[in-house]
Length: 233
Image (cartoon, rainbow, N blue to C red; front, side, top):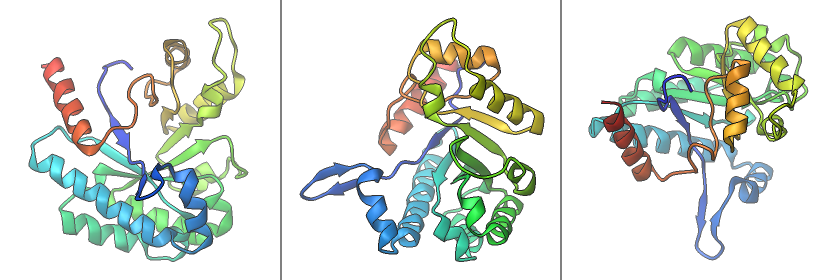
């Protein structure tokens, strides 16, 4: 918010179904989870993200970090960090260009395995974000125990910001926790100037949501980054 710069983007998966059209994750990922397909989907997603980054690098477009959600199954299988290392090498991508997003609930399923994999990712140079922060069941001690770089304020809290004179203690508490622990902070689901102004005045200066951009195709993202760079020259 202080510079107007695009700091990153989040990779979103959609299924262009031949009969049903474009499906959102909520329409097919639960079924994929039940049928044991999440590891294959996450592997495909990682390849697609790196391929897109590689293409932007080839075109000389200003690099930005891309975040992607990963399933608990990927961390529990014990070799996700090795898979990440191989994929980055294959596409010649710097680890700093990738951020993996996990939910708080991942941390309580198999904490030691998860911690080992996240530690290896951080040693590789990949950053780790907790998505939908404040909606899960994990202890705040996990922010100390696990190698977390970024906290993302869940959009359900942001959505409550509807009044200029409102007071939203959960958001203020999350901002205070992130600052106190020296973590990066991102607010999700920002849809209005009022929300953006409240968050900025409260100490959150990195935001994502429809107020800025709706989901873009890879080609449209390239055009947007070029246009943004030209405007700042």
